[in-house]
Length: 69
Image 1 (cartoon, rainbow, N blue to C red):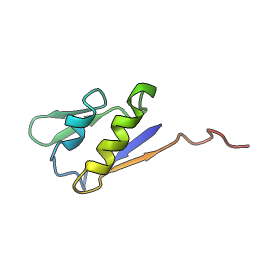
Image 2: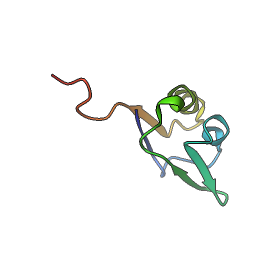
Image 3: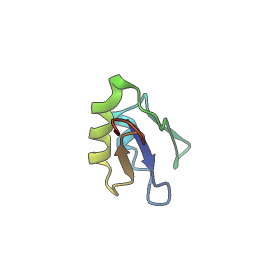
Image 4: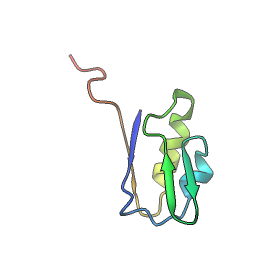
């Protein structure tokens, strides 16, 4: 699983940090840091974080080429 965060849209509500602290981290009041390639044991937490984001700034997907013929 891969994630992309639209940092222009992100408002620093930090719901993602509370729901998936091993993937998302807030530096200062508004600087979000994240791991683009999500560890297998964090997939469900990241999905919940994406749904909980008030501005829908988190995009979740699979790496290109996975499962492609």
